[in-house]
Image 1 (cartoon, one colour):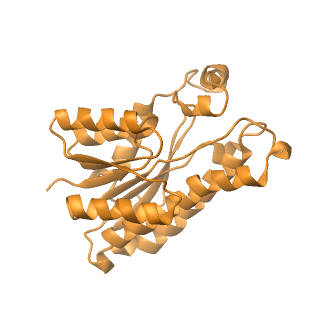
Image 2: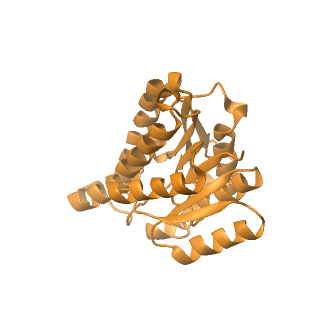
Image 3: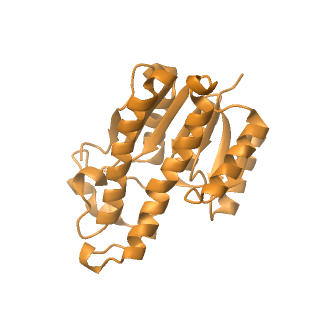
Length: 248
């Protein structure tokens, strides 16, 4: 039986590339999205045309009722869950911390932190061997920003990803004896649309000379790390982090 994987924020960028790679490696998929319905539908249609079992679920991961409905859809369609990729995330316009508002911090933490918590909680309920599941793997999307701080740009986003790091370690230790591994990938400068969301579509090209490898990364390079952490090839890896950042 194919393993079932939920990918949040799956309509574009790293999430979409992870979905394509996971499908190619035999996973059945639930593709979560919020706003990008057209992109999610296009990805879903493409996967189905290639013979893959996939569904798409629109849900704001920061809203508990919507997360519950998404997981009920997974239960109804697949009857099981084997993996979660906590990929959904946002950032806002580049800014110094002194100019940021409380509402902005709340928005950043609601999606990036609360959303990851809610999805992880529901995944554990289904995968824990203590609760009748068969085990599984959770991969959280952190960021090198958590270590670098993102000064003058996204200190709020960096702080949120620091919270993800702490959750990754704590949850891994809680559920390690329940058949669940929890790890995180920490992308660096990756060519995705998220930079345009922050007000600078060309940010990777501006900063890539500060990367030892002298280039930005691709979503596929991040997806490869995610799929390794999901797979049995990493069966003794938990509470761990993979930097996909070209050495930066």
